[in-house]
Image 1 (cartoon, rainbow, N blue to C red):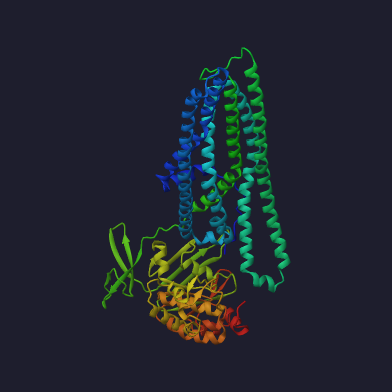
Image 2 (spheres, rainbow, N blue to C red):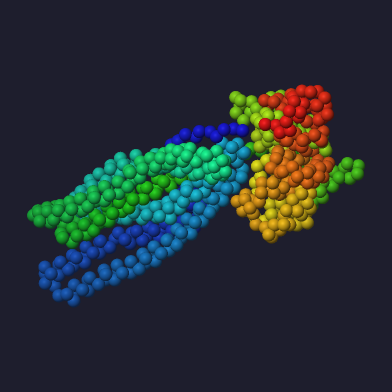
Length: 639
């Protein structure tokens, strides 16, 4: 099998945020513009009150200086106050609306992304799962997706709101005074220099942190799955030591990422406080300076009302920049998570150039094939010949040929060399040989889990590269040594082999496999709920359900990869009778270490280092007194 690849730590790809935004607008083409409008409106509403506060202060100051009666001044003050109240009420409604919309958009987007990830994952080749830790893949759906939730629901609205406030306030400041605005710009430039210096250093570590989390989760899952082995060999201390190394790596990456980000916000906030003091001092001096010329868009002279408004705007200006800085942590983490998610979504799917389809058919006694749209129990290959523009049908019989096949999981390390196998319909072909000889690899190639390097594999005379993969696999039954049961009832797990199977068909398949006896003794019988890969059943019972699942599919070709290895001798005798019935009229490939299970095979092939060194029936191979003879007479278990 291929070894996991060392992915290293590639830098974050560019354009991740842009791709995410395009995805949001594609998912919600109406809600996103409405949400953005509400955010912009509420942000402007939060920025312009300083103008009205300046007016109110100017009116009151003028009334005091010129001894204008309060009632007259009140007539000018109240419209400004009423306008601000109305504006704030509308702004509150806008905030409430966009908050609800963002919650809906966030969860909806994450739901669609998980769907897209899972759908894409189903199209990935087996090689991908052989070369990536399953815990790391799980991290895409949990940790990485959660970082996107924070980005979409919190960080992005905060950044947009802060940006609008900063732009609006900047325009108002220019309206009142160029000089004070220039002072604030100098302070903001210093803020950005500090932010760029400290923030840039943390970006690469946030990406490393996400990768380290995936690595840690992958190791934890690996140890959880192998707890019995860990305890049997007293490897707890070694596992702890290895986990400590991985966890220390995660700690270091997280420390470096957060050390920058957590220091940044307080530094920027205090720069803002210093700037506030400088504006107050500078503004006061300018007001007291006789003959000071105030340059501004409004042409107004600098007075105390403008300075007070500027102090509020300074707080708003630096405060919103500080909010941007505070979101830096979440943004970088989310972009690192999004980068990993997009990497999964961009993985090349399993290629399928096939065009020969498997169809329901009615076959007359004379052999004439007619395609039908209902299940008949008979199948045919529908072959469209592009050159002639014609369609021909070939009966599905289960004739399998491997012709001088070469293959290696790694192109530089061949696993199979010049392997030829001939399996006629109804034949039982067995593969025996040492671990790593290439037995399971042959069955992987028949299923097209991997493609061969050289040679040909033909199914009913058709090159399997021309057969649509899903149709090819539908015609093959597979029972693996490692049983996989899914959360659901026993009946659901048997029906997994044929989703439209009736209860009667599932029960008949269970009886055929010898599983009916123990199933009927379960608390709820066929309705018993299985969880955790059938952890409430014995290994042998799980294997019997897997055999029943293959039986209900009723395929013309059956592949049994150590199908009875987890069954005791007594149970094996029960299953053998059902298996014999199951194999009647089918082409069967059997992989076995237990040589007693292959004695009645039509052909036994002995593999050694990827080559077939002997082939023949049991009696023929015994008579040859070669490698098979030594294995059979030396031990019934092949190690």
